[in-house]
Length: 144
Image (cartoon, rainbow, N blue to C red; front, side, top):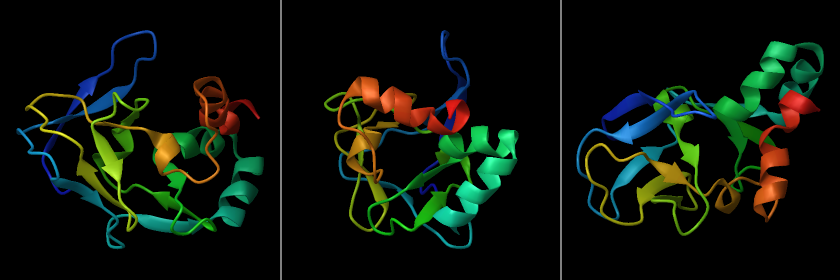
C-alpha cells in the first residue's frame, strides 16, 4: 500500500500509459510503499499461470500489476492501489529500492512532482540481469 500521496500522470510516448509521481517532497530513506494484506494480495504463481493460459486479457494484466518477490517466490504480489503505476528505471537512475520485507524506500531526496521509479531487477525474483532480457521478461505474459 502506498504510504505517501501520489499524482498519476499520463506517460510520454512511445510507451504511453500512466506513471506515478510524488505529490510531496520526500527525504531520502522515506518509506513510500509496504505490502498490506488489506490492500494488496498474495496470489499463488500456479493460479496466475493457469488463468493466464486461458485468459489473454488477464495475461496482459499480470506484468502491469504484479510481480514475484524474493521474499516469497511462490506468490505474486498484486498491487491493490496506485503502486501498480511505479515504473522501471535501471540503476543508478532509480530513485527507490525495495528492502527485504517488501518495503519501498527512497534512495535520495525526491522533489514533489518527480516520477517514482525502481530497478525491478533488484527485487523481482527471476528477473534477467541485462536490459534487453529485461524487456523480454517484462512482456513475457503478453507475447508468450
